Structure formats: C-alpha cells, structure tokens
Amino acid sequence: MPALAPASDIHAGSGGDTPAGNLRSPGRSERRLAARLARGDESALREIEREYGGMLRGYLRQVLRDGSSAEDVAQQVMLEVWQRRTSFDPARAAISSWVMMIARSRAIDHMRRQVPEPQDPAVAATMLDSSASQADPTETLAEQWRLAHLLSLLPREEATVLRMRFHQEMSQSEIASSTGIPLGTVKMRMVSALARMRTMIEDEE
Amino acid sequence: MADRGEISDYILGEMDELDRARFERDMQDDERLRSEVESMRLLVGRIDELGGEAWDYVDSREQEPAVPARAPARRPRVPALRLALGFAAAAVVILVLVLALSSGSTKSSSSRTVQLSALAGAPPSARGTARFIGPETVQMRVEHLPATDVAHFYELWLMTDTTHLVSVGKFRVDFQGAASVSMTLPASPADYRYLNISLQRAGGGTGISNVSLLRGPT
Image (cartoon, rainbow over the protein chains, first blue to last red):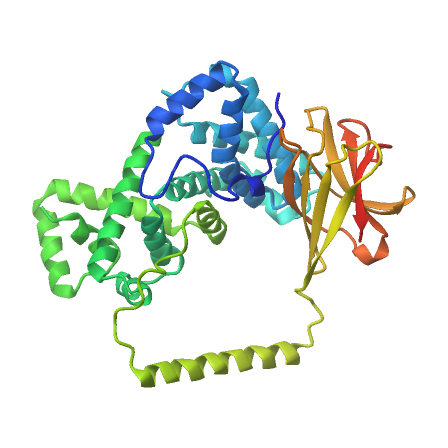
C-alpha cells in the first residue's frame, strides 16, 4: 500500500490531465484508470489521489470541521479505495462518486465515534440526528464537492465566468465591464459552461 | 425553440421584461423548452449553493493566469470616474485603518517561518518548514521523510522536553515522504522550545514515541 499525498500538495504547480480548453472525456479516462487500479497498479491510486484528493479533503474538512481529523479520515478513505479496488465498477459510478461515497461513510463513522465528547455538540447533533427531516448535510456537501470537482474541469475562462456570476454574484453585464470581455463573449462562455457542466453531470450519473 | 443564450439569460434573471414575456409564452407552447429550462434551472440552483470553500478549491485547480491580463477594459474610462474611484478607495483604506486602531484588537495576522532539520536516525535529506500564521495556525511542509504505512503516522508536537509537550496533530506522508498540512495550534508556541516531528505507531498510545525525525525552534 503506497502512502498518500496530502491535499494541499495535490495541485501545486502545473500538471494533471485537464488542460484548460481541452476537456478530457471522464468516461474513457476513468475507465482506464479504474482498470489500472483493479490490476493493482499503485500509480493509479496516486493518480486518484492527485485528481480527487483535493475534493476529498475539502469535503472532509467541511464536514468534520477539523483539519487533523479530515486528514486521518482521508487516509482511511484512500486505503479503502485500494482495498476495494477490484469491486469498483466504473460502469456503475464515477470514481469521484465512489470516493465520495466512501468518504461520506467514513466521515459518519468518525462523527459517531466523536459523539461522547463532541468538539461542537450542536454540530454533532445536527450531523448525527438521523431523524431530522432536513437533508443530510454529509450527503449535501458530498454533492457540492463533486460539483466543485466538475467545475474545476471546465476551461478556465468558463469556470471564471461561473465563479464571477455565482460566487461573486455579478451579473453578466458586470462581468463584461469588470473584465473588459464583450458581453456577447461572457454570455457565450456562460452557455458553454452550463452545457458542459450538464454533460459532465450526466456522464457522472 | 429559444437558443441557449436566452435560456441562461432567463434563468439568471437577466432578460428584459418584453423578452421575458415572449420567452414565457414560448415556454407555454413548447414542452421541450420547458424541460430544457427546468433542467438548467436545477443545474444553476446547484451551482448557486456552492460555498466559498468549494470555489476556493475550484480556483486552486485552475492552472492558467487569472482572467485576462490580455484584455484591458475596453470601455473608455472617464477621468472623473477614476478620480472618484481613487477617492473612494482611499476612504475605504482610511476607514479600515481607523476601525483597526479603534477596535483595540491585539490579534496579529503576521506570519513567520521556521526550518525543521533532520535528527539522528532521519534520512539526511529529510527537512521541513513550519509557518506560523497568527496565533492559531501552523502550516507545515515536510520532504524526504520515510513513507508511512497504515501502521504508522507522524505527529507534530510543541515541546520543550518529553515531560513538557503537547500534540499539534497527526499526518502521513506520500510515497515520496512529503506532506503539506495546516493545523490548529493547541497552545502558544512561545511556551515551548521546539517543534518536533515524531514517528508514531498506530495503537501505540497517545504519548510521544522515542523516534523523532525533524525538529526546529518555535
């Protein structure tokens, strides 16, 4: 079992297989990656760590609210990915979904273990109250981080437009004037970004 | 059928009233358009719910320089507007300074970095840095430590000696012996002499092991 890279290491510098403007095909590359993993190719695990480690740790940090615990659980998740590699079927789920499914389970386990002495009882109670009628925050956050991962695969200029619109809450006209990009181009990028996102989500599901 | 630009303008609420009314009439007559709009609305709703941490992650994965260095604003800037913006910026700076001074806050946002050096028994190339950010956070980066397996992990300690110490956090390293982690400090570094990294055995208790590999001053 190879040791694992921490989140903050993963995207330092260049690299990766998703150059801006040149989208990969998640289906094909994931199938290849899953096949290598199933064969016991340790480099495939490292690639999963590199590709999904940031999403995994971001999710765990947000759910567990403790960086040290998040790192511990992330290591458990990657160990489980390795141990269960032969049972993963890429035809049934994307690797990101599989990793996040394991992450969610391990995060819930971790929170249950913390219940006797929760760092923040209010948070723990919310997280663990299975009778609560609200959406499960561990699941909601997992979905959000999967979505964030897909956003990170967009060409940079398209991701930028989405970020300015949805995170910075700028209108398309405001984006155009603040960047100097013609409004028509902003709109074109918005349309393209949303279309790509929808396609990627459909591929994932 | 409406084009995709119209659909996104409609969902984003950026269509003028006349176009909106026309678009909604089109939707009434076109089931495919309604379905397309609903699908996009769901997607936009999901993106809209993303929090700042998720967007930070998206940013961190982007590999090219930030939006157009290439494209200076094309609209001619009115000098008076520039001047007004300059005054506004200066006013904001002054306001922030005044607020900072009047709040009497003693929190410091300064940071400093210390080097962690290899101890006897560590690979000679092992090394690390720890950056203290304010009073509560330490960001640590290590390289060339022996890789950890599932039975072992590393632990960062604030310590003066083996009787006066506190654990900061645990971590593992990648196959190249590197790790980069951010931890919350449980105590003031000023109360301890060293930052120390020990190799710990899983299930080996909560005390520090007798295998320390990196150390640096606090």
